[in-house]
Image (cartoon, rainbow, N blue to C red; front, side, top):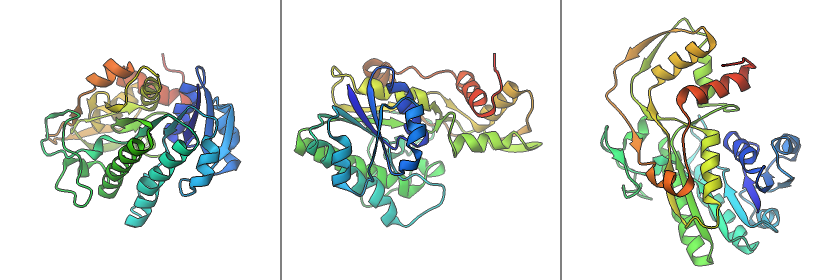
Length: 304
């Protein structure tokens, strides 16, 4: 089918384009036309320019496509004003859903996050029936240890807007909720892990949180695009591992790295990936395999 992907120049968006391109005609939707060449290099057949704040530009970008994958979102390391989070992750989602419906699109895949759920127990495996964050007030939640509060709340609100508008407009909505994502071309989480390899000694927590490779998230999105897949929401998270284990694995792969001093933190965040395995054919790769991809792509180092 012909699929539009917003955020196609970004980290996850680039992997989505790469994974979808062999089986679909991919339209990369970007804000900066100067970056179109790289999107075409990842396999897109066409690039169109639109911003999440411009509903009419989005409608033009989605015209002629059968499905839209909404990857673009605000997710930054600093902490901009609340209005910026709402503009991108709530209003932007509303504009995109309305534009897709106006362009005749019948299926939307929205990339959300596990952090839209309240999480109060440090060892429970969270199911899809777990309560979502309140749209007005966020109670104490363990996600605040790993995810910015405003990001979590704005994504939860964006999900609510997407479900409501999709239902009103007769559009099928699939929601993918990944955990922390790593992989090549990642300027944030993966880059921080790689930078730790240059140190002599690092102290890292033993708390285990899910890490999922970007290409595995993209494969789950591909499953959500299948006409036989019903609308719904899925966790796409992978195994729970600690930062200490990740740096040790990277050190083993490259043959050098810091001495890791573990800081005991009694925390394990886990999510039920069973529905995604059943409905989307989600199969997260082993940590070593995923990190080997990072080393090969980022450093040109051959890994057996």
